Image 1 (cartoon, helix red, strand yellow):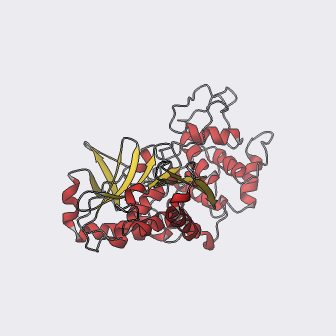
Image 2 (cartoon, helix red, strand yellow):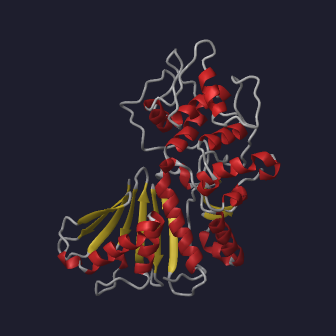
Image 3 (tube, helix red, strand yellow):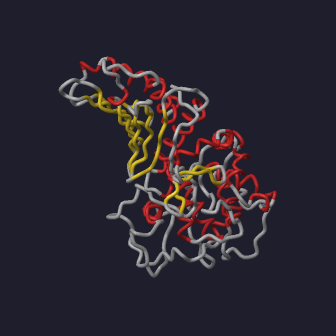
Length: 404
């Protein structure tokens, strides 16, 4: 599949922002009731999950106090519970057992506290989190040292904090503010700690950004093709190596949009890969992408403005949809480039199972005349695939990827 350099893209890009949280895991009916917390709170989904798991608890008066500063001992206790090591509250000073466990595990190596009930800052929260996750170098994400491109104040971060801060970014656990600063001296609130802890607990809700190599490649692409922005008409721009959607006088990103974080990251990567791999090729096709009315979509258009493929991801869902009818020519065959785009989508959803998913889709497309009207389903890894067909002519309507 080929795209020409003047391809038009409008994208709402995933930013990994600490204080953003909209998770589908929340169960309003079974969540513990805190007197001062409602389901409208930005951190409610995380608090709900972790409260049910007894990882985070409220105060004896029935409140959570989300805006209150979190203390070092409180965070150590949370990390103990997150790692399945709830050693229990002690008589006298309540956190004695938790602190002893943290010392025994080496979480507190290299630091010395005289008081543990003092507010914890983002540097120390990052360091303790990475320690508690018990990572070894083989577990480190690729390119994690290059994530400094996303951190505006990286040059003032102390050298001994670099590794844990960068790992926190690369893992999507503790990341930046809207101004792209880490601001490590800021203290954590209990609400922020709930969101961070949720990301440790469930990798699916982590705030992942494009890999630095992709971000740099996109920046280089636009820098070498300044005319590429001419068609955007103020809808999209590059800020700090990130593509952002412009809405009036503000910029917005995918993590604020309501899309499931995992789906947002996948769609972002699909678009980035398509651009990087094919932007230098000259064809009559135009790639467009955008986020409007709660739907993220990627669309490949011919010079006659005919859709070759459309990918949709909608607010609050874990479903990505490929519309294969739009990929057909008048004879009902896939148009050039369609199969390659399908494989690209599959690779971003599940690289290990991409070939099998691609073969399933293409085989069923070729045999669409025999597809039942109810469609066919299968599962690869943690992804369910469903292909449906029109009853009257058995042309495949769509492929649904449901991320479990």
